Length: 366
Image (cartoon, rainbow, N blue to C red; front, side):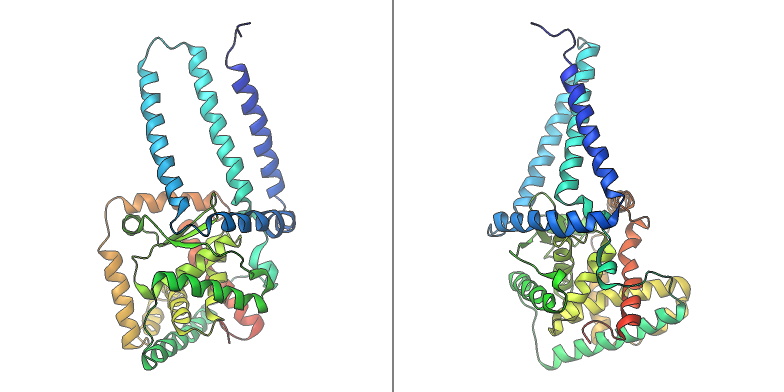
């Protein structure tokens, strides 16, 4: 029997999917429930399984998936354009088609949250370390700048004196795995099984769009842009593994990556983390007291200043009209996932480090 309203099935599916999505949002309002039943339970098993399935593949399966999705989207846009131009399409069919699109969007939202997105709503690393979240003073910010300068300079001098050269990206990824294994002795919640860190297919494109790494929630892989300067790659790798472990917010991934790298005893990883975090701390101080920030940055050793110049020249060479729009869009994505500061969320790691330093009386792996 012919259905008089072919859009009914799509409408019912959309209603069901909407109800599921609403339940997910309701569950996400309680960060303790998310932490206990999702982040450290369901998600932990899902991510470990994904890394087991895709980790052995020598290339990024997630990047292949993204390329396929982009091509599929382009194809669908072409078909949609043809439908719109076809004036013979009835209103019911148009409504059916739109319900189908809405259903796919809701399905993607549900899958994304179940595979990773709910981690944005967890209580996270501050709760695990029992750190107090509070405003920090200019004096505290200056103290952290000074402590980080000492660490950055010392690590750079040590690696030069020992004539340590930077490893290949593959060796960086292997070392990252070992570093997290070591860190998990002191911090059990950082236990990392089934390594799956890979070079991104979109390295050069990433430089134009302004990203150095990313996590794929659909394959559990961490991708690192291995075209960026070598001294940045160790910390980026640690940051992306933090995402794999369920620390979705950028300041949390920065903090977890920082803890792992600086606890390692590896001068290259420690230098990479200390340098990156110092740049955040110095920028934060610049917003309050630019003169003081400049005085601190001038205390970097000549070798460190050379690396900073190399980094700035590298990113400057890829500046283009598209990158600000991509950055704006990603900032909006962060804001929609409980990071109201948008792109500035990365630098909020300084508040965590100051709280960590106040509680334990040390910085990094001291």
